[in-house]
Amino acid sequence: MTRNHILRNTALALPFAGALLVSFSTAQSAATDSTQLGAQIVAQGTANGAIACARCHGFDGQADGSGAFPKLAGQFPQYLAKQLRAYASGTRQNALMEPIAKGLKDAEIDSVAQYYASLHPSTLPSRPVAAQLVARGEQLAKLGDLNLRVQACESCHGPNGQGEPPAVPYLAGQYSHYINVQIQMFRQGIRKSQQMQDPAHSLREPDIAAVAAYFERASRNGAK
Image (cartoon, rainbow, N blue to C red; front, top):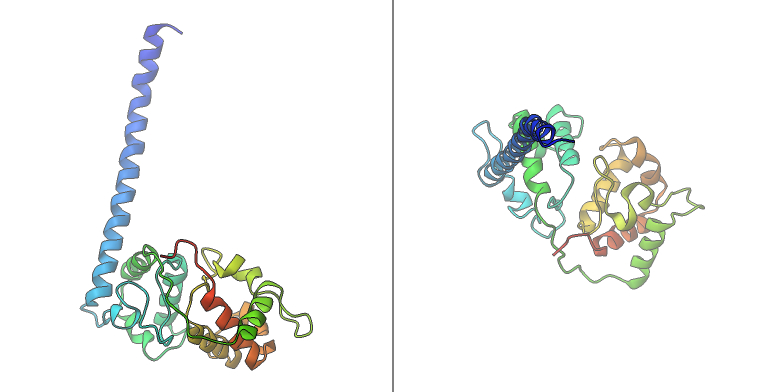
């Protein structure tokens, strides 16, 4: 190939390379802007009536430690956005969350989800429970129980409860009280999920407590 050919090909390629760089830079800028908007909403709420998310979930996404509110730090943005839209439409019922979600515009929902997803989860000390309870929870999480006709939790929620993006949330490090309450809500039909309906009904009360205790103690990848 002659020097002129090389120069001509390079000249032709440069505009395409420049366009790619501009596109990448624009996408990065848009993602940053979205996360910054999410941080603002989390801290201050919106003029449309959505209160600051940080009041319950914390600015760091760790909530208050009681388990009444879930950790959101590092949760998958698609999952978070889907849940907020479910609250807004009434598909998922919660007296506190429904009016907040309805006060968010579509782009604001995505921004809040992106913000919390960008945070690193932290591992907080768990309340002491019997070792046998955690061991039973680990058995159910990893192997399931043929006698109860319950499949392993990890078959959907991933190894060690790390989650399966975009649709299946992580459970590792989540508060046991929150996990317990959500399983009970699936069991009672308050919260709807075709995947969760059968295991929620098949698990016995001590088994629900065991699964919740195990996942609270499971380490999340990237946790501080």
